[in-house]
Length: 284
Length: 333
Ligand SMILES: Cc1cc2nc3c(=O)[nH]c(=O)nc-3n(C[C@H](O)[C@H](O)[C@H](O)COP(=O)(O)OP(=O)(O)OC[C@H]3O[C@@H](n4cnc5c(N)ncnc54)[C@H](O)[C@@H]3O)c2cc1C
Image (cartoon, rainbow over all chains, first blue to last red; front, side, top):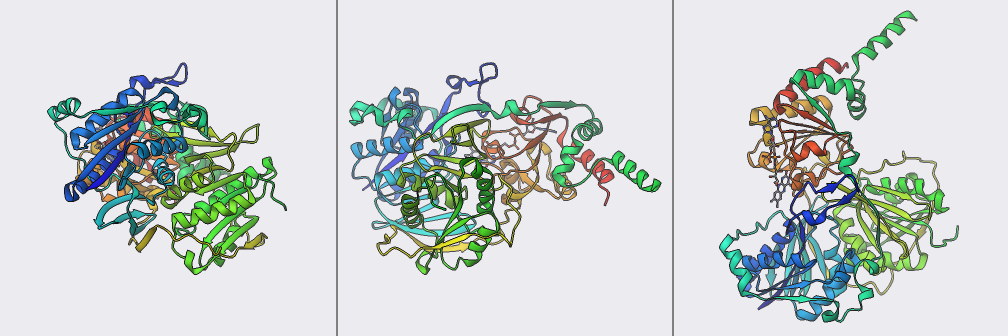
């Protein structure tokens, strides 16, 4: 029977984040959460392994209390239990400290795991670093960007596409993989299934004390990286709006941005300047 | 020159040299940053039959190249490469260590950072030095809607991965001279726990879309396959590449190779045209490297329009046709 762990993260649902242009901060509390897409694919991969070999799936997340929702969703999809690591002191962790915290929780709640599956990256921070770093923390072999998994005894066989290579890799269990969104299509969960999942399975919540972690070893303070400044990429944009007939907008586009488009193309797109240059040459 | 914990190291990711010259781009940026730190720019290269690359790194800005050349290092292996690089870094104490954000780099760098007990910033789109001499690592988040400046105040080296195409390489200079330090393979090389069974270079997977200066993306709002085809004409005129959203790929108006987004390719053009695209995060996540975005959508409130430098409120296919006509008139051969 396989002991599978799926690490997942709750990410904001909206692509257009509520950004307060006046104060220059993010109104994160307004962005409703969802299960990060790649994590959903990782859970699906785990479910398929469980279907084939039998086993138990534990979904693990670190986040604010609201992140509990994605654990219930994981249970609705077929996970057998959930562990929520939640403690204000854990907030603001970078990938180094996140992987450290996850590892300690896994060692405590499921020390004899066979395979840890993570999404290959999250839509909010996109680092793709937690998976490989978690493998280091757990001291097991790890492979990123996996799209296909097979188990043969204690050997895990993996396929992935990376840097224009199609690779087949192998490792012995226990190990860790990060799963892409390419191949494992997550199963559908009905509303009623989701509701049931809120009743049946207990979600274990752990804080620093329960994990026996010194608060100085977690969260923002323990993180080697610091965020200096965050700014909206959107706000830096020129945000020019052009309206009218296709001919009119295209004329306006060249009038205002012809040089910029020309520079990208490596071509001079301004006919008037051409005429002037030609004229000067004629005069010589 | 003796090392004093301030030098800038660039990891030599040479496997994709012909598609992806990110190592050369990083060497060039490292040369820009070095004077402020009074640092030397070093490349580290592990593998087999590396002479060509060693020469190339020197010709593109490396002042010292550490080379470990041995048949057992022929295949890229995260564990082994991280172990060897970490040992080298422990001896020479670089102040900064940069890795290209290739797939390999993004798997290798986090492992290396753990070994070195230091921080790591992913997928940077800019690097600078602040008044305290710290490396400022600029990285996009939230699908490029937000940008963060990140520093590593205490841990060393300061590590970042950087997207290919972010920096311009220094032109090849044959007269450049550099120091080459050849290192023997250590005897206690670890046996990798991950075994490569086979690696096959994928046929005709072009990097064109990723490398193109002009990218023309089309979405469902182009209307029909026939209208979508016009984008290819526009791309030919602009010597650019066509990208597509998922519904377009599903409808087979464009091949899977053209998919731009989380599940597809990341682009970083000087100009991005976006025709009839709503701007779902799964698509826009791959656009944060674009310098200048021109979006055409009949809905002025579409997310894509808010992300754009220029939002053109009009029919996508008609604007495409008008643009083709105008460009034909303006481009003089
Ligand atoms: C796990 C997952 C992964 C995904 N990965 C990707 C990915 O990698 N890449 C990707 O692109 N998508 C991906 N998607 C899908 C993504 O969520 C969106 O559905 C998709 O990007 C929308 O494509 P679209 O903008 O072309 O279509 P729509 O969202 O249908 O938008 C069409 C737009 O065209 C405009 N329009 C309509 N008619 C006209 C007209 N005549 N003229 C001008 N404008 C017009 C509309 O106003 C609208 O804004 C993924 C989804 C999931 C769940």
